[in-house]
Every structure is written in structure tokens, then in C-alpha cells.
Amino acid sequence: MMQSIRIIILIENTAYKAGLKTEHGLSFWIEYGNNKILFDTSQSNAILHNARTLDINLAQTDAIILSHGHYDHTGGLHSATNVTSETKIYLHPTATEPKYSQKTSKPKYIGMSDSVKKAIEGCQITWTATPAVIFPGMSVTGQIPRLNDYEDVGGAFFIDENCHKPDKLLDDQSLFIESSKGLVVIFGCAHAGVVNTLDYISKLTGEKYIYAVMGGMHLLNANSVRITKTIEAFKKYQVQIIVPLHCTGQKAMKGFKKAFGDKCLFSGAGGQIDF
Image (cartoon, rainbow, N blue to C red; front, side, top):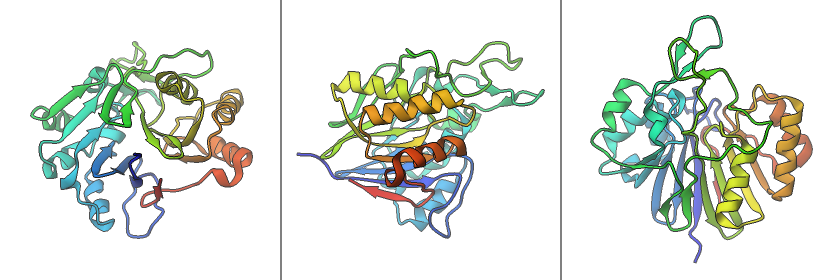
């Protein structure tokens, strides 16, 4: 029997409901049957305010999944672990390694903070270099193969302070859930590429169709070819619900809306979908 699924956007760049904090980041609260999952934690303790406002009890968290190691997806973990107890954390082995970006001449550290790294030391961690089952019917991809020639990580990311060694962001992973209507896929930033991710999930599950995709898709700097191929992939998998968030970018969001109409939903913190 399929579990009921409720997905609430806890933090996003924008707010869907009044009274909620926003920041450049992303966090989802997922209720999967009787299980409660926190997927990403945005960049600060704003998740605590929004959880209280949305009547979400973070102390009930059964599992925390981190899509990758950037600060805007892990920064709230320290606050989350202060209110959760004996919660399992799922993340890729390289998620804790140093990460930098170089948008200007001065490099910026964008990896996990020391306080976050310290917070997870005493936690039960499952390292997800390979796919892992969170609960029956809910899994993470682990490291995603990069097979096409048009998707990159989406920016100037590095693993050294001098910005000489590119960060391939091998820690990027996504969540996929079985629902009565088909697969539901949740991205953090999809640094591995939306199409690479969907293709991999299709291969892992044997499913030819995907019902819903939501989350950050890091198409801010994507050219029209990549956006077009992403739209083609959504059509190939017959996606019925598309919720682009966070780092997807206005150009891609407009393209999705034009191609899919009412199937493309714009949302923000406080937005909710039930399956």
C-alpha cells in the first residue's frame, strides 16, 4: 500500500505564505506516512521560525537528508539537530569537504560551516556515495553519473581557496519517492544536472514515467540549448507537476511555464503539495 505524502516548502528564496522568513536557500519538510523527513536545512536558524509558524514539530524528525554540502542547504543543520534527537543523517562523503565559489576576484567559502560539521559529529550518519533506502518507497540517489555533454554543475565552484581545482560536486544527490500516481523527485540544486538525475532515477527504478519534480534546478546560467533539453526530458518522462524553486532561474522558469502551463507551479516558503 502506498504511503500518503505531504511536502511543505519550509524555506525558500521567496514566501508563498505571509509571516514566514525567506533567504537564499532551500528546505523541505516531508511527511511520508508516519515518517517525518527534513530534506536540506537552508542556511540559518530561519527553519525554526518557519517550522513554528507552519505548526511543524521538528523534534519529530526521523531523518535528515542533505542534497549536497553548500551552506545554503546545510547552514540550518546545527539548529535542527538541537531540537531533534537520535535522527539519522544521510549525506555524500564529500559533502563535508571545503567548497568555494569565484563569482568575483575574491573567492568565497560556500561549504559547511565548522559549527555544522561539529553538530553532526555525534549523529548517526549514513554516507550515500551509492543509492540508499530511507524508508521503503523512499530513496536517495547517492552520487549521480554525469553522462550527457550539455549539463555542468552550474557555476564556478572549486575545492581549494585559490580556486584552481574545480569542484565536480559529486556530493549532489536527489530524493525520489513512490506515490500512487508515480515517482516524485525532489532536487536540492541538481548540480549533477536535471536530465542526468532523472535518467539515473529511471534506471534505478525501471520507471519510464515521473509524476512530479520539484526543487532547485540550477539553471541560472544555463543556455537555451540546456533549458530546451530539460523541457524535452520532462516531456519524455511525462511529468505532470513541475515546481521550480531556489536556483532554477527566471529564464528556465518562464520556459517551463510556457511549455507546461498549469503543470508548472510557482511557489515558495509555506507552499504545500499532497500526494
